[in-house]
Length: 442
Image (cartoon, rainbow, N blue to C red; front, side, top):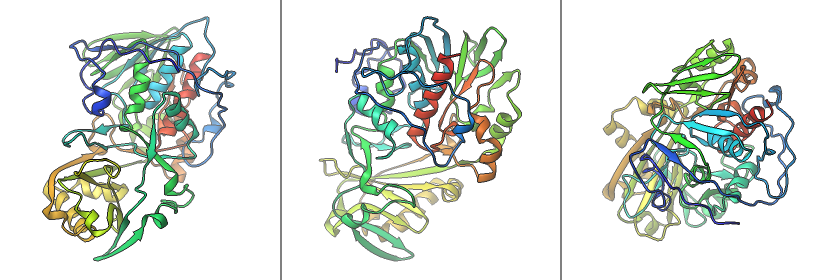
């Protein structure tokens, strides 16, 4: 595999990537990022339709897949002889994979990102942690049956490590009682019915943000940060995109990858379909998610035979993202979803800390005495996410699922909400590739 070319220009906003990733990105005051592309090799991979929950992708008319050659990427497109000018809203995984494949096929790509960072809901936190430690705010684990995600990690030569701790005891808290379960038993069970076993989950070494960074390092067009799209005007000939700072971008095609809670902040002329409008207005449920991180000077729990992982009856998952670090410090993380996260979001900061530590003191006796750092992250409070991931009811999926990913004229749509894998990187990749093929063959 040839060496990747370095980024020759970069804007601020990548500070939340891991330190190892960010150090290769020289900073300047330009608002745009110019990224050189490089040819990367990957053995042949056949993509198959995936079932399961989420949008009914079978109902979306998609172009036939291109011929995959041995040197192609997992979502490769044939080289085009009719390059289109394409604007992509959002530098999350769906937008980045579409940009990457369309660019390799010869199209003219521009990405408008409202934030000051890449990745969307793939977000590795390095601050406020010390000693080079980090934790994930969003996507954290990859099951072994998510072939597309694993294929892109392999394509970019990203190393993988086991996600769950492989030694020590897991803490299971019910009421005020602590039950300890050996790692060998715990990781050889699925985290939820229908899933692969915990032992079959992995993570990207150095942080999950290594994946969006790898895509970005291989794009050869500009990424505009702080580019908040306010208006999209479509005609028979083109699409005009306006941003909050008064910039105008024209395109042959537009790919919109923003989550539905953010979609209704953009004005479309003409208006989008009734189904998309209603879904963006709240008729298609999203799940809240909140995480509380605590850093400790020492991993005191190890003296009790514990590995810093577990569950409580809130319900709550407890992870120790630092479990395979060499240092002495450790991070414990509370992961809350759904109604538990929604209720957590209503508490004051002190109430949030107290409510978590009350359970943690049972799971890891001494937790209150060993704290050095704490941080709270909630996706509901993120302006350009609005919530964590699409989580529609069965009736909502029946009413809206087949419409969310459908193109409307020159405007195409992607994101985990427009896939058959809600809440996963796999869904963002799947939908981004599907939209790229639509655009490429239009």
